[in-house]
Image 1 (cartoon, helix red, strand yellow):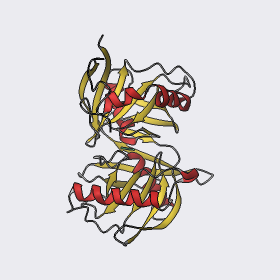
Image 2 (cartoon, helix red, strand yellow):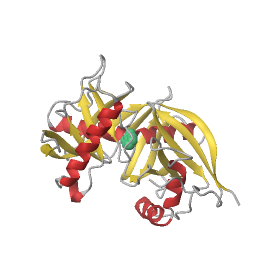
Image 3 (cartoon, helix red, strand yellow):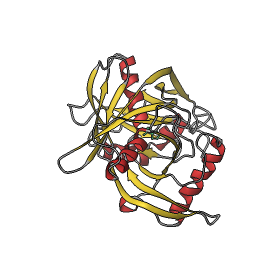
Amino acid sequence: MLNHIDFIDSHTAGEPTRLIIAGGPDLGTGPLLERLARLRHHHDTVRRTVINEPRGSEVLVGALLCPPHDPSASAAVIFFNNVGYLGMCGHGTIGLIASLAFLGRITVGEHRIETPVGTITAHLNPDGSVTVANVASYRSARHVAVTLPDGRIIHGDVAWGGNWFFLCHDHGYDLQGDSIATLTIGANTIRHALVAQGITGVDNAEIDHIELFGQASPGADSRSFVLCPGNAYDRSPCGTGTSAKLACLADDGLLAPDAEWIQESIIGSRFQARYRRDAQGQIWPIITGRAYVTMVGQIMSNPDDPFVYGIPQ
Ligand code: PYC
């Protein structure tokens, strides 16, 4: 018997999202964190089948569309990649909204979306762009020194934008000139050094995204290279990474609430960003970008296929 999973692929500023719209596991109802635990512990084969080769690749971010727990929300979503699960995903949320609009399930306006790290709002704009009001973002540590295997000492901030990031400027790479391969090796070296030196987010959370900053192109405020947990780089400017950046800028007094910040990715694609500060001083990032639907398909799973659950990572 061939089982199948229906999906829609999109890309947001170059970064792909594969949204599962039917054929996924039944995770029941209830808070999304509980459903994420069920997916992780009992149905991880779905993640591997959808994302890993030969049906996908490490570049894809997967998104499982779920019914919302709170009836005022339009949808709930669990994001994942080739090595595990994400708290939030900015480009993926933009892709989700574009895909739901493509299906005719939502119209222009505001939509509440449940994610495992909190409910966010996404506004489908009349021009097709999407504005995401992310979870509260913050910096947990500033100017942390990290020693690399070659003896160099670099510094970075540790910040939460829905995922944990290490944001580094003095890494020594040229973001306009160095190859993706060089940047990937460099960012990966930093990630391993953070683990080896016990540098974590709050509650010992692993910092699984590395964000290197460099000289922006004209018209942008900043250019970044973001390495994702499964060793693929983010083709988009990374919504949660941009949120982490805004939290640092706000803390340093370098960006005022509601002032526009243009974040450029390593491939030159851009997000417009700004933030609001609430009465408690919390930073709430707002990210605008655009996604395009690229493919509609069915993933076939044949039990006789030796790689039915993907090539192990
Ligand atoms: O846009 O937040 C994001 C993201 C996380 C990982 C890849 N993209």
